[in-house]
Length: 212
Ligand SMILES: Nc1nc2c(ncn2[C@@H]2O[C@H](COP(=O)(O)OP(=O)(O)OP(=O)(O)O)[C@@H](O)[C@H]2O)c(=O)[nH]1
Ligand SMILES: [Mg+2]
Image (tube, rainbow, N blue to C red):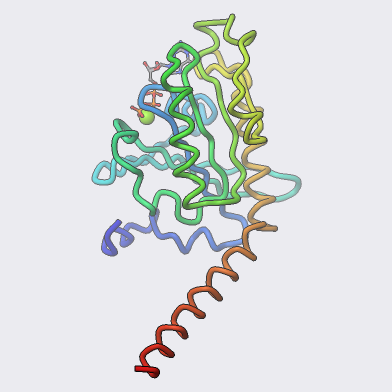
């Protein structure tokens, strides 16, 4: 996003530096039920904040984890995002990711590969889970095996935004994992190494100039 877009306080990435604020993103093809899942989880505190200019909706939630109150922002995009890569700012400072597919549309399951690849390009280590939505419409789906999650060692949930099956459990687990990650980011060393690598590259650049 362009710099001026951060002037909206709700989109200021610095707020996620605060100890008890987490950002959770949601990925998946259009119409798999990302927004409905959030609405179902939030129910009466449901106050989506439409950032229409950015095709982005922020769902704000106060969660209690242990004896702490955590401010959770769920970031949800709308529409045809699969056909264009998500903007890097969507991933920026995210602490967890929920990847959703629709058990009635195989293509949405297949496309998880693309979503996951993009996620890992930006956020190599954040907790992520795979969600098979709309099981109310196809109960037999729970007997089918979806190996994507196993292959990548990700938690997997059969859910229904329509009747609420597993929705609270999936969100609570994800919030807890987001917080754990925040308190103990496993990719901290990656960031340090990257910084060092950039530094070394800069130095090499300087040296070659000096040699000329
Ligand atoms: N039967 C059934 N329908 C669902 C369920 N969840 C969502 N839907 C329906 O699927 C359609 C798409 O749901 P959305 O939540 O708008 O999907 P989305 O992933 O947010 O889609 P985009 O915003 O376009 O990316 C709607 O018509 C929902 O009513 C579910 O658990 N069961
Ligand atoms: Mg939506």
